[in-house]
Image (cartoon, rainbow, N blue to C red):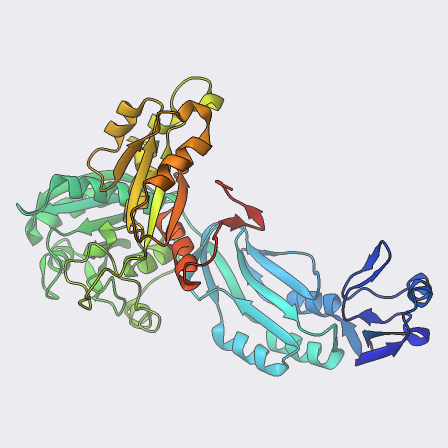
Length: 478
């Protein structure tokens, strides 16, 4: 391929390096110049353009990208049509993405003209989410380079998405006088939320004494009607013969691993009984924030076996964000580590489109919808949460009772959302760098989603407006 200035008389068939405007007509970057284009450029007084001219041995960027994708072995993934030298690959269903990282590295070393980028190995993905992209950097690449990439790909499955398989999950929680029942109740709700993206569900919950004998006595009958049992101890594991690992052995099982090199998540226990998994959850699993428990649980729900060596290999990248509820933070801090961002939760609407009932009070897994959203706001990295109420404010206040948030009432809620925005923003604490607007009827938005928005705001020094988008479309509230 030859790249550089091209005289107009020689430009037919060349690919434009930069967009060119001729009157009302715009020729886009990478546009192949036709006879008519050349005539129009000459008539506009343009004598040369910066362009690429392909050699006989070249493949244009789209053809090259398409050929490489055809050579790649993948499963549970669909590829889009090539455009501007790029082919994007998306998960067909929610699951866990796996990739042969060493092979990707070898391909990316063949020539800088060919690049493959992917998500991290073993990350959980949603259906339709982009998991990888193949990009040709220049406008064309030689056939020999593409052939080398095809040879490297041949016979190998480079990446795949193992779809989640819905499972029936039972929960055992041990009790001690120091543990509040409300904590146990919240644990069940958080766990069901965790399981929901895989289509799994909690089918039973048992509460028992904090002893190996008591836990073992619950595990055995629960496994008869469950695919998996999760055990939440009232006290964290402090020894490999502590309550949960001992209970697994007493129930006739095997402890695969006690402890993992992921923090938060160090104190996990993984065992098997009769081919079914029993997980002793670390204390951080009571929080919706990502931790090592998720890494093990997601793989098992996707049908990916997890052994001792698999967990041992999780150390690199295993230092995760701090869990706010952690009793002993890794490092003492002279001040708050939470960003100066408060959430304004809009919960004043009349649900007029529903034609009657207040959707914010509708039960969602037995909990009012607005409380679901508020719990995720409270569990996020935000410095505080302000709930703006209005319509049926007394009932909404009751639904939010007990949560660590401030409630302010918008007396003019009937005038529309703008009035609630004004009330909410006016209530933001002094010293805050920003406010995040969250709607009260979006239970699919997780604390981790809110944290990503906050992190983007903080990373830019609090000088940008950050909005959520999905496949280029702006999310609510815009």
